Length: 281
Image 1: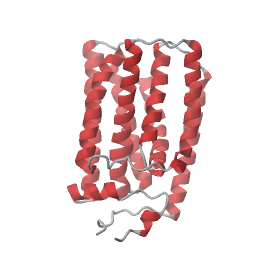
Image 2: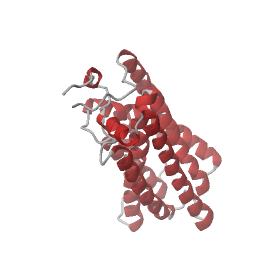
Image 3: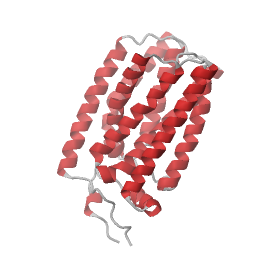
Image 4: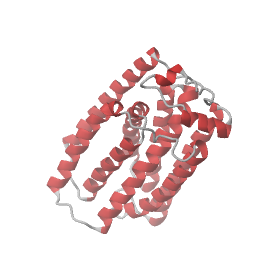
């Protein structure tokens, strides 16, 4: 059994998912095209859900009952992302490899921020069990799962071969930002949507770098879920996050910049092969 020397590099991507996709579609361009079309389909489902929620039902983004409608949309999106992952890469061949714990170092600033927000929530309002709070938790679990699987799993893994890691991360981040444009249909003001898209684009760059280094989406899914729980509950309970919001913007930009530059430097010294090697025999 022979293995490409590049796959031994500690920061190289495992080739098995790409090889699996090549078996199904034939070329890296076809895999990438299928992944991008799937991501656009995912965004279209979200847009349809937000249109029905905001324009038909009349529940705005900041309405406490919004989360019930979002739960239904996220169930559909999670099933869709699972179906696409299975179709393109097989059962769990898209972002569920063994975790490289050193690759999660870039997540630490975000975890510290999340802890600060969580402290602000629990010190402002004593958590009380309710159907709404339970729905928030379940819905955010689905959000963390489906969004990471689609954008840091399916799109990123499909793009990294033909495009290289830098452009693959940018593509993933742009599609992730485009997803949040759907919030316009849920009555979120245009300026708020633009700011949200800018923030998640930068966040998408950081998360893409971490996903490639960590070799697993599970830690990112857990972080994404916990972050959204804190944000949703904070909004539900009218928590004033104050300066934490400004701090988050600076930390997000700084962390993404550091991870991006480190990724470019590492890729220059040890590039990832643009084409998957043949299946070892």
